[in-house]
Amino acid sequence: MILSIMTVQLTPRLDILAILEDKGYRSTAPRRAIIRILEGMREGFTAEDVSRELPGVGRATVFRTLKLLLETGVICRLNLIDGAPRYSLSRIEHHHHTVCVKCGKVGEFRAATVERLMRVIGADIPGDIVGHRIELYVNCDECIRDEHR
Amino acid sequence: MILSIMTVQLTPRLDILAILEDKGYRSTAPRRAIIRILEGMREGFTAEDVSRELPGVGRATVFRTLKLLLETGVICRLNLIDGAPRYSLSRIEHHHHTVCVKCGKVGEFRAATVERLMRVIGADIPGDIVGHRIELYVNCDECIRDEHR
DNA sequence: TATTTATTGATACTTAATATCAATTATTAG
DNA sequence: CTAATAATTGATATTAAGTATCAATAAATA
Image (cartoon, rainbow over all chains, first blue to last red; front, side):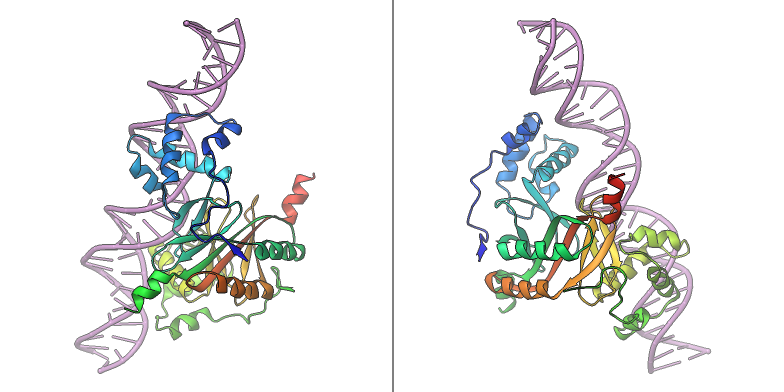
């Protein structure tokens, strides 16, 4: 039912740079550096995490590039339960996130039933649905284990 | 299927102050003032909107009070498509939001099928689900109308 | 009424992000 | 292969949203 939790990689490794170039953006040294760092990031990183790894790249450029990647769907932004923003590489086409309310760890999931339901709900809602965002807040297995010890 | 879009009020008007008092918080003039303003706010207001209406109340107190009300579930926080935070009085018990990607207008909806689905999905996801957040991004009727004119 | 305790407002600070703009790079046209 | 043009960058300042600190004040209580 639910595909890909954490380890499975359904989408073949994307050539992120090519995606940007296809949209007319230039291949530059800062962008290549940012993309390389992104590929090594765990899910749920911050813009500062990226910036910290690249002292030679301006902070503004990091934010600008993350914004481009958001727009092209290469990464997505989500929020911890307290509203703090986090980024995540989109490893599967369209997906949603689980977020641990204790440790903030982020996971991905995809469920076709969700998408079907959203279409059904759309029929009952005024206006045209152009997208949706779902975050499941969880106590992750590790945090549960830590608690019972 | 979907209950309450905008106008229907399922929950009888809450005595927000009583909710805070029940949790052990004091009834103070600033809190009463904030609650009064909140009751007149459209869905999708900002903390600054509230603060602006109450020049006599400190900004920090506005944020502190909004935080208390978030914790007690009296209001909820959601995000516009660009991540900008917005608040909304919870007019119905448990609900989700529609957010216009053009004008930012916020609406509420509730669908029992969503809740059922979340429980089903929960069974397939590691950890314990403690909550969820769903935002439907839409082009609202007004924006569609404006566009075609 | 006195005392305890919570709350407040001012202020400074933090985090996440955007705006400005001159300097630099990449692209393209010649 | 250059020159011109156009996009991108980094530094810096600024904004938005919120938190931390702490002395002063207000509410609850003894």
